[in-house]
Length: 171
Image 1 (cartoon, rainbow, N blue to C red):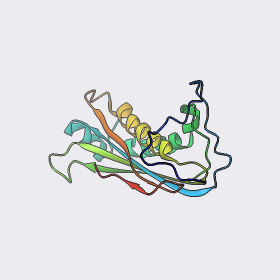
Image 2: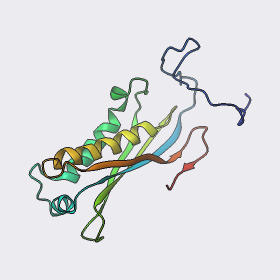
Image 3: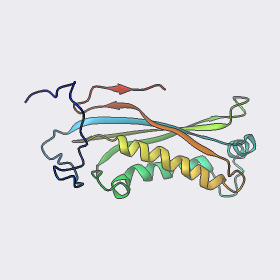
Image 4: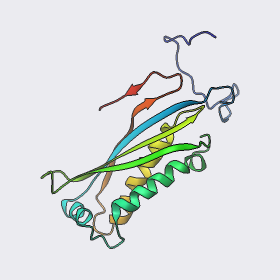
């Protein structure tokens, strides 16, 4: 089997020769340990962050519920994104870094999701879905007090496994 030409133009894999969408066949690919890490942030008013940190939001434990929502999103990614393969996930971790009282002047929460599987395809979409839904859950739970919140910077920061070389992004 020859290696792909690094100078060739990448092609979209979810379209056939006639331009019709299809799910990529991964049946012949070996199962390998795969990891993806995604991150994103939600910016908010200092008063909103104070409510979250104090645990006094009317809808309950904002970060606890957002964590569960993120885990559920990773598990349901193939139901939400039509051409994603359903995967047996072996680990989903959703973590938050709150910048507020402990970091004067900062007004946001960073969410990081780590997803793992042993399978024929990567878990980047599951990690991205986990971050997006966790941050949207924070928005939903706090929108009554802050409609100016902004979700930003959602991206894959690390990918390991499969034929890809390890990818890490810091910015």
